[in-house]
Length: 350
Ligand SMILES: Nc1ncnc2c1ncn2[C@@H]1O[C@H](COP(=O)(O)OP(=O)(O)OP(=O)(O)O)[C@@H](O)[C@H]1O
Image (cartoon, rainbow, N blue to C red; front, top):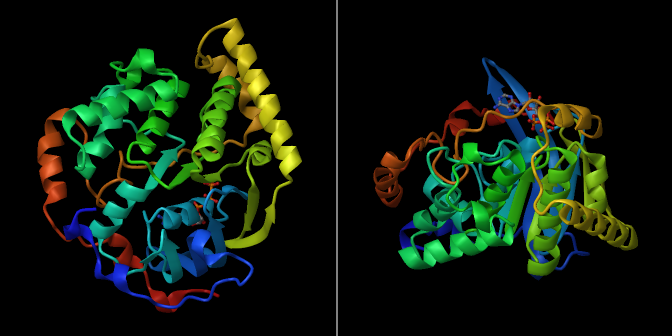
């Protein structure tokens, strides 16, 4: 990591109360009594009301709960996209709090975290290959050839070796989501955070995406945290957290045999798709409509393109802006975080 980005908080050794049953050395995320209140006009909207749990390295956690219970808010805090109003979040040993600098958070996200959202968030003016290259260019530790090779390999891993130079609008929804996964993996993240990754996909593409995610967890040991409305998807994970009204209502380990059976079934189904027609095509509008019974309808979030990788409010809409953008990224500018201004710590409703 570039030393310019290293926040002095890295060296702080503040003691946080850890559940004694959990092995501290394998704990990759710690969430302690986290609250989040958004200020909407003059009123506070409380999204999280005292959430605590630990995530162990290599876990695959599904977060379920009804609309508005705080799942996305929690995922954003776990990904350091947003900051808690009160409470402690530690990601890969780094403490995140309201005063943590944006530059440090952006660097942490770039190095350790991968994000996949329901809406694919690809840059429309860049090819699949260039979209996957971007996080590596921004990190700035590899040369041009290494970046190109890595991006190509990642796209091959998700079955898109034949689509390297396609632009997002030349790809199906499932293919775009696979590019997003390849991009999320570009800097070898320890943690992959997914918000409804299959929410906009038909069953076949949803199956294929899930298989890729499962393989990343089992074969590469990447810690997965996935928000979904599709309760069936919990069968592929090792643990399920159910949220209710901004709190954890239930947190339990999933049955390993049940998981293995569902993964076997999924592998078999995918093999059938590929036997019939190599690759998985996106569903037609009609097919997608028919498939919605499986997943509760959800309004897609209006994420700004790739904001999760960079500073808040940073926009990158076309290729021409890229060099200037990279230069800006490498220049230590401290931008104020709007969330800090709208939070009123005294107004938290317990
Ligand atoms: N930026 C914001 N400003 C104000 N209120 C917000 C903001 N983001 C979320 N909220 C509110 O916080 C609460 C939790 O929202 P969140 O998006 O985390 O829920 P969710 O469980 O992910 O819902 P869904 O499943 O519908 O996506 C909701 O009441 C929502 O209206």
